[in-house]
Length: 122
Image (cartoon, rainbow, N blue to C red; front, top):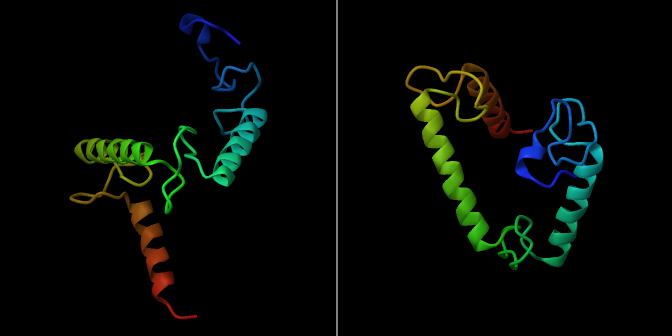
């Protein structure tokens, strides 16, 4: 594993964790690193500690500690604001939002179908 930041230039198609393995198709990390992260995540859930930092106890209704939850909320709010300013879809982040709206046409249709399905009795 490269030690200096200058040596850590990720090559296209290689794992973003700099393990030297090839990334999974359509992903940034390799299968080994993904499985390792998932094992770590579920171990932290079972132990009742924050799944992000792994240091603090998780809040009772979440899987993160208060500090990590607040940091994530700030980050998400900042991202939402930037996307709105740039006129991008706040759901997929890839397409232009419809005029005077926050979602692109595709996301608007998808969320509308989900809402409609939730309201329809079985």
